[in-house]
Amino acid sequence: MTKITDVARAAGVSVATVSRTLSGSSRVAPETRERVMEAVRQLDYRPDQVARSLRRRRSNLIGLVVSTIENRFFTEVAHAAEQAAHERDYNLIVCNTNEDPEQEKVYLRVLDRQLVAGIILAPAPGPEAHLADYARRDIPIVLVNRRLNGLALPSITADDEEVAYQCVTTLIGEGKRRIAAIKGLPTTFTTQERLCGYWRALDDAGLPRLAEYEADGLATLEGGYAAALRLLQSGDPPDGIFAFNNLMVQGAVLALQELELRWPEDVDVAGFGASALGNFYRPPLTLVEQPTREMGRRAVELLVSRLEDDLAFTDDHIVLPNRLVLRKEWERMRPVPLA
Image (tube, rainbow, N blue to C red; front, side):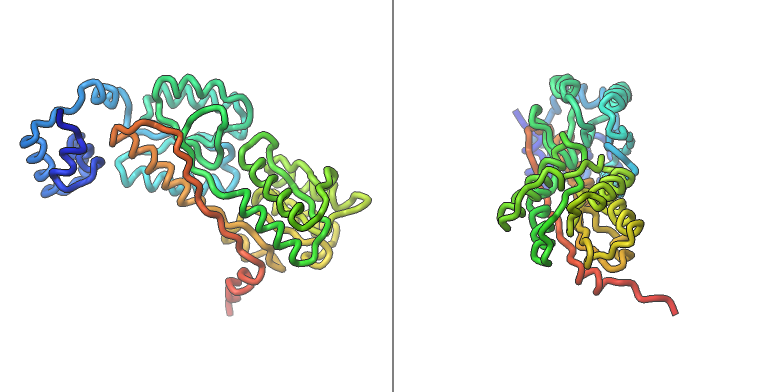
């Protein structure tokens, strides 16, 4: 029996192009459409009726469910995902759970009723049993930034453990020996990965792991600020702070300013979340630049390739590289003052 891959090979195009041609997409050039249809006629290709009916049940909508749109990380992921979806004739619906698993369940039910073609999900912390039902019903889900150990779902993440190790090692190389960690939500994949990198850097430098130097910042600016104040006003304050996201970095800097402490001289701060705002820290900080835009784009590409090429949704895990932007690099990128 002729398969869609045979048509693609005969026409000299991708499987996705054949799929778009047969669905009547306006994105296929007339000469390409003619070549594909000629291959269809010659090979007597007849699309599987069951697969076609399943696709017709679904729309051209993709749901993007993020854990907190307040975080610039997810704003950039959403922007890149929206652009990638539009390029492929899909529309994106963005839902914000505020890290609330109950709200996540609500949005997933809404998206299911809207017959979305698939879902890109940054899962909220907590039990994941409700996702098993969607997996059993073959509703395509791609995880972004976080991974779930209990479900075999494809994911797009970054090498957070390795870059956390590099970040803390940089602080150690600058002479810091009492380095505290301001952590995110304790059960999330990203927090666990970054904590492992923090621990590994301490271990390799022969520095002790001290529970009193690990503070919960709740992944928010306010939480990072409160955690940094507690650490800095303790009996044995740290001389370095590693914050697990951009909001908590900002909170830690606000705490230092309130206590009139200088960085990097009194207490140095480093962490995740390099962006254009990194140019405005004075002095600059060592920050992790995350692959937000590539993460959003790749998540859409992975989802659409499974939808249009009729591929099984295996638990593929794509790990993208982060990049550590050192203080001296920010110095070179500092904006030129207006005359």
